[in-house]
Image 1 (cartoon, rainbow, N blue to C red):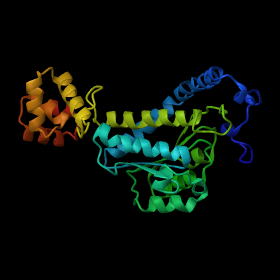
Image 2 (tube, one colour):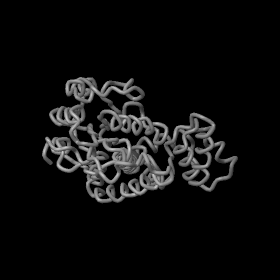
Image 3 (cartoon, one colour):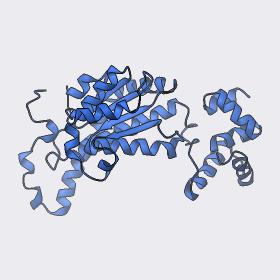
Image 4 (tube, helix red, strand yellow):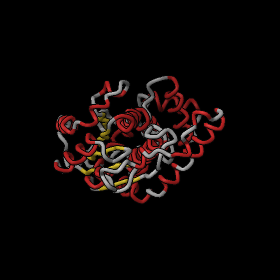
Length: 299
């Protein structure tokens, strides 16, 4: 793509020039029709996404981390995905990290100028002391954002795996990365507002990457979130349902197993299915890399 040409995500569609005159329902229908094109665009990148998942999972199995880096909406989506991994998959803080140009305050307050600062990306990543086991995923709708491109270049020089996620073809971001995902969604209903289709596409891709990586790492049992952290009433109820579903045990047995394992659903499932005590369950899981199916084979 000509680097001086407007990004497709910034293109103005003349036929939409009067959407502010549309009745509300017609406006929503137009936007919804555009949104429906996003899953198809993501589907066209599934082979590339699969390659990313397998490469990331292999590195994380060796102690690596995922680091998302982006600015504006793209950065916020990375921060969101990182924040949701600990409660969903029981990951330790710092295993999945979201970096946004301008720092944490940019999550809630616009820091648009920060996206043009490659030095900020270099400093943010230098603070993480990257290793070859880590993965840095640069996120940018246009694929041009200096912060995201610089993050990928810095990470690649440090030996980390690098991934570029853009909503345009042949972008600087994807060219700078080892692996690229290009979900081309075209112009937005509101010209240049990449919080719309581009943001939806990025969210879908990050959902796929983080969820599939965690499944590959054994942080689920079937489709059950067995590493969920039961830190509130809703999650404690979820943990009970997960253990009951996985084992078929009655409520009393589930409650005893969870009490014995300090509320850890995965351990409680192993206690019930393998008929072992909590310390043995913990030891079996540790020896199996946290993979419940593997631990069950060791009994």
